[in-house]
Figure (cartoon, rainbow, N blue to C red):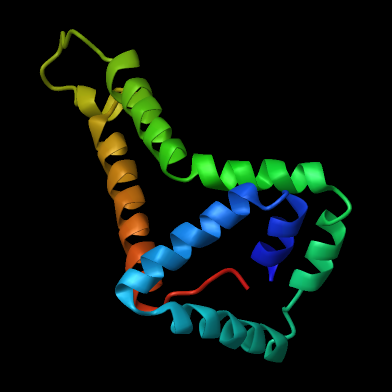
Length: 147
């Protein structure tokens, strides 16, 4: 539902291209019909749980078409590039910026004291990779167009 309304508000160009890419990807995998049916199931579940607020939220944002275009742009361009930028920044901040170059005392665990502990970067990187993998698996097994 949001995709259809955002297509109308944005003049159709970007949203139409997004829809074409989505449908092409789903046509290749043969699950386009499922991707159309799953949001209806999701809406039914949300209605049973009394947490279906999407029409109210959409009604609010329809009064601000410029904001909708901005939010769509953020979603389109910050998903993957934003993740990459965050990992590069985290690597720079945690690994290279605060590196302790000398270790005068052997009995001190400098790795634990250092704000550039590489283990922190590795943990964040693995967490982000696992979250993306988990999302990919769910979306592959249960494809869902925006309701």
